[in-house]
Amino acid sequence: MTTSPRSSTRPGTPPPVRLRAGRAATFAYFALNGFLMGMWIVHIPSVEQRAGIGHAVVGWLLLLLGAGAFVGMQIVGPLTDRFGARTVVPLSAALWSITLALPGLATHAWTLGAALLLLGLGNGCLDVSMNAHAVQVERDYRRPVMSAFHATFSLGGVLASLVGARTLAQGWHPAVSLGAVALLGLAVAALAAPALLPASGAPNAAPDSPAAGAAAAPARRTTARRIWFLATLALMIMLCEGVANDWSALHLSTVLDAPAATAALAYGAFATTMTVGRLLADRAAARLGPVAILRYGAATAAAGLTAAALSPWIPLALVGWAVFGAGLSGCVPQLFSAAGHTDPDNAGTNVSRVAGLGYLGMLAGPSVIGPLTRFAPLNLTLLLPVACCLVAAVAAGTLRPRPTAPAPIDAGATT
Image 1: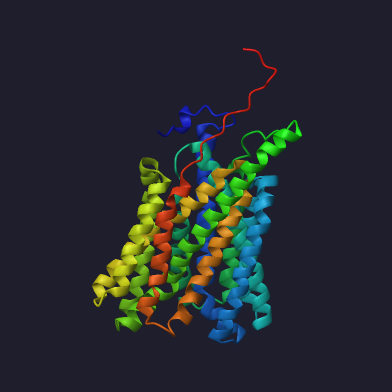
Image 2: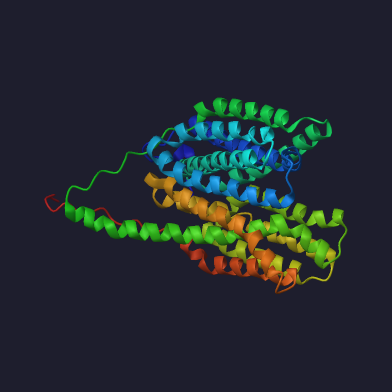
Protein backbone atom coordinates (compact mmCIF):
# COMPACT_ATOMS: atom_id res chain seq x y z
CA MET A 1 0.00 0.00 0.00
CA THR A 2 1.31 3.44 -0.86
CA THR A 3 1.32 6.43 1.46
CA SER A 4 0.54 9.94 0.31
CA PRO A 5 3.05 12.69 0.94
CA ARG A 6 0.64 14.42 3.30
CA SER A 7 0.40 11.42 5.58
CA SER A 8 4.10 10.58 5.52
CA THR A 9 5.75 10.65 8.93
CA ARG A 10 9.25 9.78 7.86
CA PRO A 11 11.69 12.18 9.55
CA GLY A 12 13.15 14.75 7.21
CA THR A 13 10.33 14.56 4.66
CA PRO A 14 9.72 18.04 3.16
CA PRO A 15 6.27 19.61 3.56
CA PRO A 16 3.87 18.98 0.66
CA VAL A 17 4.33 22.40 -0.98
CA ARG A 18 8.11 22.07 -0.90
CA LEU A 19 7.89 18.52 -2.23
CA ARG A 20 5.66 19.54 -5.14
CA ALA A 21 8.05 22.37 -5.99
CA GLY A 22 10.96 19.91 -5.98
CA ARG A 23 9.06 17.61 -8.29
CA ALA A 24 8.28 20.49 -10.67
CA ALA A 25 11.95 21.49 -10.72
CA THR A 26 12.90 17.91 -11.56
CA PHE A 27 10.46 17.97 -14.47
CA ALA A 28 12.12 21.17 -15.65
CA TYR A 29 15.61 19.65 -15.66
CA PHE A 30 14.47 16.47 -17.42
CA ALA A 31 12.71 18.54 -20.08
CA LEU A 32 15.79 20.75 -20.42
CA ASN A 33 18.02 17.72 -20.86
CA GLY A 34 15.78 16.31 -23.59
CA PHE A 35 15.51 19.70 -25.28
CA LEU A 36 19.28 20.27 -25.32
CA MET A 37 19.95 16.80 -26.68
CA GLY A 38 17.25 17.20 -29.31
CA MET A 39 18.65 20.53 -30.46
CA TRP A 40 22.07 18.95 -30.92
CA ILE A 41 20.61 16.04 -32.90
CA VAL A 42 18.66 18.20 -35.35
CA HIS A 43 21.75 20.34 -35.97
CA ILE A 44 24.11 17.43 -36.72
CA PRO A 45 23.82 17.84 -40.53
CA SER A 46 24.51 21.57 -40.46
CA VAL A 47 27.40 21.17 -38.01
CA GLU A 48 28.83 18.42 -40.22
CA GLN A 49 28.63 20.70 -43.26
CA ARG A 50 30.25 23.62 -41.44
CA ALA A 51 33.12 21.41 -40.24
CA GLY A 52 33.64 20.07 -43.77
CA ILE A 53 33.60 16.39 -42.82
CA GLY A 54 31.71 13.31 -44.02
CA HIS A 55 29.25 10.93 -42.41
CA ALA A 56 31.93 8.38 -41.55
CA VAL A 57 34.01 10.92 -39.64
CA VAL A 58 30.92 12.15 -37.78
CA GLY A 59 30.17 8.57 -36.80
CA TRP A 60 33.59 8.22 -35.22
CA LEU A 61 33.41 11.61 -33.53
CA LEU A 62 30.08 10.72 -31.95
CA LEU A 63 31.94 8.06 -30.01
CA LEU A 64 33.71 10.94 -28.23
CA LEU A 65 30.32 12.26 -27.17
CA GLY A 66 29.53 8.85 -25.70
CA ALA A 67 32.90 8.66 -23.98
CA GLY A 68 32.45 12.11 -22.47
CA ALA A 69 28.98 11.18 -21.21
CA PHE A 70 30.25 8.00 -19.58
CA VAL A 71 33.10 9.84 -17.85
CA GLY A 72 30.75 12.58 -16.69
CA MET A 73 28.37 10.01 -15.20
CA GLN A 74 31.13 8.35 -13.20
CA ILE A 75 32.51 11.66 -11.92
CA VAL A 76 29.26 13.29 -10.93
CA GLY A 77 27.70 10.30 -9.12
CA PRO A 78 30.01 10.47 -6.07
CA LEU A 79 29.93 14.29 -6.19
CA THR A 80 26.13 14.20 -5.96
CA ASP A 81 26.33 11.95 -2.90
CA ARG A 82 28.87 14.24 -1.27
CA PHE A 83 27.47 17.70 -2.03
CA GLY A 84 23.81 16.93 -2.71
CA ALA A 85 21.76 17.02 -5.89
CA ARG A 86 20.58 20.54 -5.06
CA THR A 87 24.13 21.78 -5.66
CA VAL A 88 25.23 19.46 -8.46
CA VAL A 89 22.12 19.48 -10.69
CA PRO A 90 22.15 23.23 -11.51
CA LEU A 91 25.91 23.20 -12.11
CA SER A 92 25.56 20.18 -14.39
CA ALA A 93 22.72 21.83 -16.30
CA ALA A 94 24.82 24.96 -16.72
CA LEU A 95 27.78 22.93 -18.02
CA TRP A 96 25.53 21.04 -20.45
CA SER A 97 24.02 24.31 -21.69
CA ILE A 98 27.37 26.04 -22.22
CA THR A 99 28.92 23.10 -24.05
CA LEU A 100 25.93 22.90 -26.42
CA ALA A 101 27.16 26.07 -28.13
CA LEU A 102 30.60 24.60 -28.88
CA PRO A 103 29.75 22.30 -31.85
CA GLY A 104 28.23 25.27 -33.67
CA LEU A 105 31.61 27.01 -33.51
CA ALA A 106 33.65 24.02 -34.76
CA THR A 107 35.27 24.46 -38.18
CA HIS A 108 37.11 21.14 -38.62
CA ALA A 109 37.19 17.61 -37.25
CA TRP A 110 39.58 18.28 -34.34
CA THR A 111 37.64 21.17 -32.87
CA LEU A 112 34.36 19.30 -33.35
CA GLY A 113 35.81 16.25 -31.59
CA ALA A 114 36.85 18.37 -28.61
CA ALA A 115 33.45 20.04 -28.55
CA LEU A 116 31.63 16.68 -28.57
CA LEU A 117 33.81 15.34 -25.76
CA LEU A 118 32.82 18.32 -23.57
CA LEU A 119 29.22 18.11 -24.77
CA GLY A 120 29.03 14.50 -23.66
CA LEU A 121 30.61 15.38 -20.32
CA GLY A 122 27.90 17.94 -19.62
CA ASN A 123 25.13 15.59 -20.72
CA GLY A 124 26.41 12.76 -18.54
CA CYS A 125 26.70 15.01 -15.49
CA LEU A 126 23.12 16.26 -15.78
CA ASP A 127 21.76 12.81 -16.60
CA VAL A 128 23.02 11.20 -13.39
CA SER A 129 22.51 14.14 -11.02
CA MET A 130 18.91 14.79 -12.11
CA ASN A 131 18.09 11.08 -11.80
CA ALA A 132 19.59 11.05 -8.31
CA HIS A 133 17.36 13.97 -7.38
CA ALA A 134 14.40 12.18 -8.97
CA VAL A 135 15.08 9.21 -6.69
CA GLN A 136 15.01 11.58 -3.70
CA VAL A 137 11.69 13.06 -4.84
CA GLU A 138 10.23 9.59 -5.34
CA ARG A 139 11.44 8.49 -1.91
CA ASP A 140 9.73 11.46 -0.25
CA TYR A 141 6.53 10.97 -2.27
CA ARG A 142 6.47 7.31 -1.25
CA ARG A 143 4.99 6.28 -4.58
CA PRO A 144 6.39 5.79 -8.10
CA VAL A 145 7.04 9.04 -9.98
CA MET A 146 10.21 8.20 -11.93
CA SER A 147 8.64 7.22 -15.27
CA ALA A 148 6.91 10.58 -15.68
CA PHE A 149 10.27 12.33 -15.41
CA HIS A 150 11.65 10.19 -18.23
CA ALA A 151 8.55 10.94 -20.30
CA THR A 152 9.28 14.64 -19.85
CA PHE A 153 12.75 14.06 -21.27
CA SER A 154 11.11 12.61 -24.40
CA LEU A 155 8.73 15.56 -24.65
CA GLY A 156 11.70 17.92 -24.46
CA GLY A 157 13.17 16.14 -27.46
CA VAL A 158 9.92 16.52 -29.39
CA LEU A 159 9.88 20.25 -28.64
CA ALA A 160 13.48 20.53 -29.81
CA SER A 161 12.63 18.90 -33.13
CA LEU A 162 9.92 21.50 -33.71
CA VAL A 163 12.06 24.47 -32.64
CA GLY A 164 15.10 23.19 -34.52
CA ALA A 165 13.12 22.64 -37.69
CA ARG A 166 11.86 26.20 -37.48
CA THR A 167 15.29 27.79 -36.97
CA LEU A 168 16.83 25.68 -39.72
CA ALA A 169 14.03 26.61 -42.12
CA GLN A 170 14.72 30.28 -41.42
CA GLY A 171 18.42 29.80 -42.17
CA TRP A 172 19.81 30.40 -38.69
CA HIS A 173 23.53 29.71 -38.34
CA PRO A 174 24.11 26.71 -36.01
CA ALA A 175 26.31 28.83 -33.76
CA VAL A 176 23.45 31.33 -33.34
CA SER A 177 20.67 28.82 -32.69
CA LEU A 178 22.74 26.60 -30.39
CA GLY A 179 24.11 29.67 -28.60
CA ALA A 180 20.58 30.99 -28.02
CA VAL A 181 19.50 27.62 -26.63
CA ALA A 182 22.57 27.62 -24.39
CA LEU A 183 21.47 30.94 -22.86
CA LEU A 184 17.96 29.55 -22.41
CA GLY A 185 19.41 26.51 -20.67
CA LEU A 186 21.42 28.68 -18.28
CA ALA A 187 18.26 30.59 -17.41
CA VAL A 188 16.28 27.41 -16.72
CA ALA A 189 19.15 25.98 -14.65
CA ALA A 190 19.21 29.10 -12.46
CA LEU A 191 15.45 29.56 -12.12
CA ALA A 192 14.69 25.94 -11.20
CA ALA A 193 17.58 25.56 -8.74
CA PRO A 194 15.92 27.08 -5.62
CA ALA A 195 13.07 24.56 -5.79
CA LEU A 196 15.34 21.51 -5.63
CA LEU A 197 15.14 19.51 -2.41
CA PRO A 198 17.91 19.64 0.17
CA ALA A 199 19.51 16.35 1.14
CA SER A 200 17.12 14.46 3.41
CA GLY A 201 17.83 12.06 6.18
CA ALA A 202 20.70 11.91 8.63
CA PRO A 203 23.96 10.36 7.55
CA ASN A 204 24.63 6.87 8.75
CA ALA A 205 26.55 6.67 11.97
CA ALA A 206 29.96 5.10 11.82
CA PRO A 207 30.17 1.64 13.35
CA ASP A 208 31.17 1.73 17.02
CA SER A 209 33.28 -1.41 16.88
CA PRO A 210 35.28 -3.52 14.42
CA ALA A 211 32.63 -6.21 14.81
CA ALA A 212 29.95 -3.83 13.60
CA GLY A 213 32.07 -2.90 10.59
CA ALA A 214 32.69 -6.55 9.80
CA ALA A 215 28.97 -7.27 10.05
CA ALA A 216 28.25 -4.46 7.56
CA ALA A 217 30.74 -5.78 4.98
CA PRO A 218 28.48 -8.57 3.64
CA ALA A 219 25.66 -6.07 3.22
CA ARG A 220 27.93 -3.78 1.19
CA ARG A 221 28.99 -6.68 -1.02
CA THR A 222 25.37 -7.69 -1.53
CA THR A 223 24.48 -4.11 -2.45
CA ALA A 224 27.37 -3.92 -4.93
CA ARG A 225 26.30 -7.18 -6.60
CA ARG A 226 22.72 -5.95 -6.84
CA ILE A 227 23.78 -2.64 -8.41
CA TRP A 228 25.94 -4.30 -11.06
CA PHE A 229 23.15 -6.75 -11.85
CA LEU A 230 20.76 -3.81 -12.30
CA ALA A 231 23.39 -2.14 -14.49
CA THR A 232 23.62 -5.24 -16.67
CA LEU A 233 19.84 -5.26 -17.11
CA ALA A 234 19.99 -1.55 -17.98
CA LEU A 235 22.64 -2.31 -20.62
CA MET A 236 20.37 -4.90 -22.24
CA ILE A 237 17.21 -2.76 -22.15
CA MET A 238 18.97 0.37 -23.41
CA LEU A 239 20.68 -1.70 -26.12
CA CYS A 240 17.14 -2.43 -27.33
CA GLU A 241 16.30 1.29 -27.31
CA GLY A 242 19.45 2.06 -29.30
CA VAL A 243 18.52 -0.55 -31.90
CA ALA A 244 15.07 1.02 -32.29
CA ASN A 245 16.55 4.52 -32.64
CA ASP A 246 18.94 3.58 -35.45
CA TRP A 247 17.46 0.55 -37.18
CA SER A 248 13.65 0.77 -37.04
CA ALA A 249 13.31 2.91 -40.17
CA LEU A 250 16.05 0.97 -41.97
CA HIS A 251 14.23 -2.27 -41.18
CA LEU A 252 11.10 -1.15 -43.00
CA SER A 253 12.96 0.35 -45.93
CA THR A 254 15.44 -2.47 -46.56
CA VAL A 255 13.48 -5.56 -45.52
CA LEU A 256 9.94 -4.58 -46.51
CA ASP A 257 10.82 -2.08 -49.28
CA ALA A 258 8.75 0.64 -47.63
CA PRO A 259 9.00 4.18 -49.05
CA ALA A 260 11.19 6.55 -47.01
CA ALA A 261 8.20 8.45 -45.62
CA THR A 262 6.52 5.22 -44.51
CA ALA A 263 9.74 3.79 -43.07
CA ALA A 264 10.13 6.87 -40.87
CA LEU A 265 6.83 5.97 -39.21
CA ALA A 266 8.50 2.96 -37.58
CA TYR A 267 10.60 5.13 -35.29
CA GLY A 268 7.66 7.51 -34.85
CA ALA A 269 5.47 4.66 -33.66
CA PHE A 270 8.17 3.44 -31.27
CA ALA A 271 8.89 6.90 -29.82
CA THR A 272 5.20 7.78 -29.42
CA THR A 273 4.27 4.64 -27.50
CA MET A 274 7.48 4.95 -25.46
CA THR A 275 6.48 8.45 -24.33
CA VAL A 276 2.83 7.59 -23.66
CA GLY A 277 3.85 4.45 -21.80
CA ARG A 278 6.14 6.41 -19.52
CA LEU A 279 3.36 8.85 -18.72
CA LEU A 280 1.21 5.90 -17.58
CA ALA A 281 3.88 3.67 -16.03
CA ASP A 282 3.97 5.32 -12.60
CA ARG A 283 0.35 4.47 -11.86
CA ALA A 284 0.87 0.96 -13.11
CA ALA A 285 3.98 0.59 -10.94
CA ALA A 286 2.08 1.85 -7.88
CA ARG A 287 -0.61 -0.78 -8.45
CA LEU A 288 1.44 -3.73 -9.73
CA GLY A 289 4.95 -3.05 -8.44
CA PRO A 290 8.27 -2.57 -10.30
CA VAL A 291 8.85 -6.31 -10.81
CA ALA A 292 5.66 -6.63 -12.87
CA ILE A 293 6.49 -3.53 -14.91
CA LEU A 294 9.89 -4.91 -15.90
CA ARG A 295 8.76 -8.52 -16.35
CA TYR A 296 5.63 -7.96 -18.40
CA GLY A 297 7.01 -4.86 -20.10
CA ALA A 298 10.11 -6.66 -21.35
CA ALA A 299 8.04 -9.68 -22.40
CA THR A 300 5.64 -7.40 -24.30
CA ALA A 301 8.59 -5.67 -25.97
CA ALA A 302 9.99 -9.06 -27.03
CA ALA A 303 6.65 -10.04 -28.56
CA GLY A 304 6.34 -6.70 -30.38
CA LEU A 305 9.82 -6.78 -31.88
CA THR A 306 9.43 -10.44 -32.89
CA ALA A 307 6.25 -9.52 -34.75
CA ALA A 308 7.98 -6.58 -36.44
CA ALA A 309 11.05 -8.61 -37.42
CA LEU A 310 9.15 -11.57 -38.87
CA SER A 311 6.19 -9.74 -40.41
CA PRO A 312 5.95 -9.68 -44.22
CA TRP A 313 3.46 -6.77 -44.04
CA ILE A 314 4.29 -3.11 -43.37
CA PRO A 315 1.21 -2.38 -41.19
CA LEU A 316 1.95 -5.31 -38.88
CA ALA A 317 5.60 -4.28 -38.67
CA LEU A 318 4.56 -0.76 -37.62
CA VAL A 319 2.30 -2.23 -34.96
CA GLY A 320 5.19 -4.38 -33.78
CA TRP A 321 7.51 -1.39 -33.38
CA ALA A 322 4.75 0.44 -31.49
CA VAL A 323 4.28 -2.51 -29.11
CA PHE A 324 8.06 -2.69 -28.69
CA GLY A 325 8.11 0.94 -27.52
CA ALA A 326 5.17 0.45 -25.18
CA GLY A 327 6.78 -2.57 -23.57
CA LEU A 328 10.15 -0.91 -23.03
CA SER A 329 8.68 2.37 -21.79
CA GLY A 330 8.60 1.61 -18.07
CA CYS A 331 11.66 -0.64 -17.81
CA VAL A 332 14.59 1.78 -17.53
CA PRO A 333 12.91 4.10 -14.98
CA GLN A 334 12.32 1.10 -12.71
CA LEU A 335 15.98 0.14 -12.91
CA PHE A 336 17.16 3.67 -12.12
CA SER A 337 14.68 3.91 -9.26
CA ALA A 338 15.78 0.57 -7.79
CA ALA A 339 19.44 1.62 -8.00
CA GLY A 340 18.77 4.86 -6.16
CA HIS A 341 16.65 3.28 -3.43
CA THR A 342 19.03 0.38 -2.75
CA ASP A 343 21.32 2.64 -0.71
CA PRO A 344 19.97 6.22 -0.39
CA ASP A 345 23.29 7.51 1.02
CA ASN A 346 25.05 6.47 -2.21
CA ALA A 347 22.20 7.02 -4.65
CA GLY A 348 24.26 9.17 -7.00
CA THR A 349 27.08 6.65 -7.27
CA ASN A 350 24.70 3.74 -7.79
CA VAL A 351 22.65 5.58 -10.41
CA SER A 352 25.87 6.54 -12.21
CA ARG A 353 26.85 2.88 -12.48
CA VAL A 354 23.46 1.78 -13.80
CA ALA A 355 23.12 4.77 -16.14
CA GLY A 356 26.72 4.47 -17.34
CA LEU A 357 26.49 0.82 -18.30
CA GLY A 358 23.05 1.42 -19.78
CA TYR A 359 24.40 4.26 -21.89
CA LEU A 360 27.13 1.98 -23.22
CA GLY A 361 24.39 -0.46 -24.18
CA MET A 362 22.52 2.22 -26.08
CA LEU A 363 25.69 3.08 -28.00
CA ALA A 364 26.63 -0.54 -28.58
CA GLY A 365 23.24 -1.74 -29.80
CA PRO A 366 23.31 -0.11 -33.25
CA SER A 367 27.00 -0.98 -33.63
CA VAL A 368 26.40 -4.66 -32.90
CA ILE A 369 23.52 -5.01 -35.37
CA GLY A 370 25.56 -3.61 -38.28
CA PRO A 371 28.26 -6.32 -38.34
CA LEU A 372 25.67 -9.04 -37.72
CA THR A 373 23.94 -8.12 -40.99
CA ARG A 374 26.97 -9.59 -42.80
CA PHE A 375 25.97 -13.03 -41.56
CA ALA A 376 22.16 -12.82 -41.40
CA PRO A 377 19.33 -10.69 -42.80
CA LEU A 378 18.54 -7.51 -40.84
CA ASN A 379 15.20 -8.80 -39.58
CA LEU A 380 16.88 -11.88 -38.06
CA THR A 381 19.57 -9.82 -36.34
CA LEU A 382 16.75 -8.03 -34.50
CA LEU A 383 16.23 -11.26 -32.57
CA LEU A 384 19.29 -10.25 -30.50
CA PRO A 385 17.39 -7.45 -28.71
CA VAL A 386 14.45 -9.86 -28.43
CA ALA A 387 16.74 -12.19 -26.47
CA CYS A 388 17.84 -9.27 -24.26
CA CYS A 389 14.21 -8.49 -23.46
CA LEU A 390 13.52 -12.11 -22.54
CA VAL A 391 16.53 -12.21 -20.20
CA ALA A 392 15.33 -9.00 -18.52
CA ALA A 393 11.84 -10.47 -18.12
CA VAL A 394 13.22 -13.60 -16.45
CA ALA A 395 15.53 -11.58 -14.17
CA ALA A 396 12.91 -9.00 -13.15
CA GLY A 397 12.70 -10.44 -9.66
CA THR A 398 15.90 -8.59 -8.76
CA LEU A 399 13.79 -5.41 -8.48
CA ARG A 400 11.93 -6.88 -5.53
CA PRO A 401 12.81 -4.77 -2.46
CA ARG A 402 15.17 -6.51 -0.09
CA PRO A 403 13.92 -7.15 3.44
CA THR A 404 15.32 -4.69 5.93
CA ALA A 405 17.58 -6.30 8.48
CA PRO A 406 16.47 -5.79 12.11
CA ALA A 407 18.46 -3.33 14.14
CA PRO A 408 21.11 -4.94 16.37
CA ILE A 409 20.12 -5.35 20.01
CA ASP A 410 22.23 -3.63 22.62
CA ALA A 411 23.45 -6.31 24.99
CA GLY A 412 23.51 -3.83 27.83
CA ALA A 413 19.93 -2.68 27.41
CA THR A 414 17.32 -3.70 29.96
CA THR A 415 13.75 -4.77 29.20
